[in-house]
Length: 310
Image 1 (cartoon, rainbow, N blue to C red):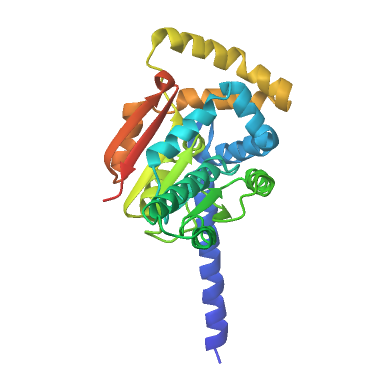
Image 2: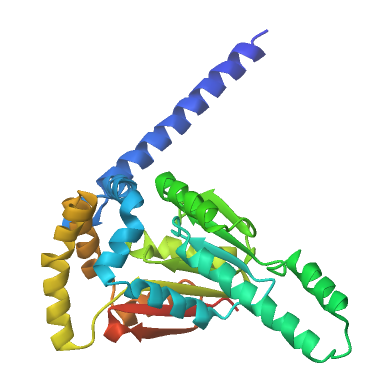
């Protein structure tokens, strides 16, 4: 007769203990400090603030990128895809890629690769009739990505919403998936993707080391990590001009175009707080990656870091 009340009592105490542990963790997270731009805030507050920044800028994100970089960000992203050189069948995870820029370029590149393969195959079959050539193209068109897929993962639902709208507008109906998820705790199984990319996103992560460990976890053996991020300018004259432009012009552009000075002030400050190239390279190696290298673009305004899971 006493078993049921005793079981209920134990369950109640266990639930209370678990609740206490959750409250303790929440308090500990709130106590730990980190940076939000040049400000010192709790880790919990940084996560909330970063989310708010990208929620605020989502609608004007592409326009502001063009305005701030004078369109050069498009060339940097093109270079990333060329450097990746994906082949049909590649499974890509693009983290913090809510507006789809990397994923769309990936799809375009795979389609171009497939087109080359078709032309190469038909080139050596000169005796085919027009109907046979037409049929060959139609068969290939049924799977124009050759099994490739890009999963876009972003913690910010507003950024994902903008990306989905862009994909419909631009006609990307095949090979894309959109997932809400945190770079520090990815909602994917181990050893799932061939390539992991993160472009202009990792500096906004609270625990960069955890994001790198998650990147390693979800990549297949032989998979590749690629990060495009603002970095340390290696030309002193350009560095001075770049600082002047960053702090005096970009926040003003943010106010004029997006009506948001503070968010773009933070974005400029976050670039200055991000580790320089060699330090970030060491962090990637610490996460377990091999053959880690980096390439400076535009004198180090941005850098592409690469590493492999062996």
